[in-house]
Image (cartoon, rainbow, N blue to C red):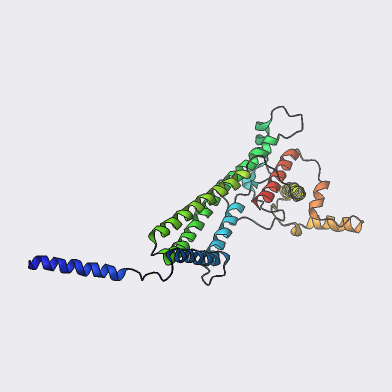
Length: 306
């Protein structure tokens, strides 16, 4: 009997301890209490999302992730170098020759004149002479569009990690004593994550064929700028080889011969002109169609990635 009484005392003490651990009884009707907690949870979470809460980590960390995502997508830009030996020349990452990408996607291939020519030749079917197959351009566009999948999925996964750190804390604060409700809210969060993943996939699918844009004016302007730039740098390479001085990628405003030409044209009444306009005075290039393809694809990239 003493042993039995001792066991009963231990069980009773544990039972009292468990009772003391229970939360205080609800002051309101359970339905009203749950509804109030749901509304409070939504209000606090909304303040985290729009940045009005005193805790700014959700907004700040997501902004940092978006900046990384932008850099990663920018790093998928086509690396076209309009020369016969592209590896011997620096990348041409903007039409001013003043910027070089510091982080380029490893999936981006360096492509020169011969590479573009091969893409065109491989795409020829029953086109009339002097017509570049549309499939050639589509294939080149597909090369950089497919590189957007990895950074998009990576960005979404990292945003979900940040979300978990914030929302799990809020769920525990607002629904910790209602385990069924806590689990239900967690399930709803998972459903929203799945919908977000599906939305990202849909957005990426929209970037696939057909390749088209309503921003045709911007596309045409960029295409003309890139074509003029490619012609100028090819001309510079030809001149630099003759002079024994390498000048590929030198910014426009540091090309003395072209500036002299512009001043002479201005004095003759032809102006205002810029150095890209001088590309129209260059003799026909035997790789004109390859240059046009490069310029069109580079222009489309700038329109599409933004």
